[in-house]
Length: 289
Image (cartoon, rainbow, N blue to C red):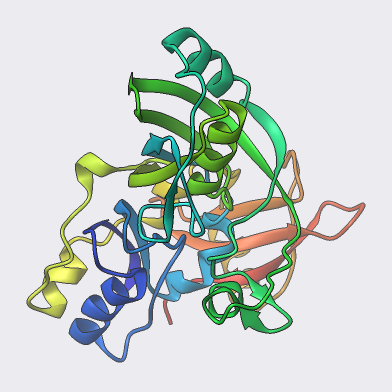
């Protein structure tokens, strides 16, 4: 079994819960996910099945789109409604024009401080474990890229925003920072991931499978979600070399990485350039023995 599942994660389930649903059906085939969603969140969760679990690092680089809802006039230690929520005294309720201008100011490359209640590790421990124990959590800012951001709806105190962003962006932290810029504070009350690359919420399936066959019938070609990567169609002699782990020469590859595919669009290999040459080495092979 080899492919990708586009699952619509329900509210209340962890990403690991969804993985376990599939794992029980197809054990011992491996299952993983690319891009955690908090239990509060719903929407597109990409599951990698079989040898596709080796593609996690590449899928992580694909942009994601979210619709997030926030309540202004409040702050929270978790930055969402599930934490300790405290009301804030708002001196002036921002109008729509002000809200749109502030939200638009978050477009582009920026530094973001992740939430203390997150799965990031600090000295080998999860940040949320330290935070729950009352320990000080010292995280570093990280660079994020907000590709698109706009107000979907606003009627104080409820603000809904659509965001397309790079992997690693915390939407609740984005809401926190928007709330601070508005001098109101903000807590996230709802979040839906509507897409990861070409995988859209409209094609996502519920995590309800009654057999291995049901899972297999819904697997999608990994090339669909990796459509932003360069592809090289491999001829049979090239395939034989790569199958045995040997490098090949490739002309006209613009970058240092290309996906080696068969003429019928099956992923066969991830190839990386030997620096300064036209030689490409296979770093991950997906040939069927």
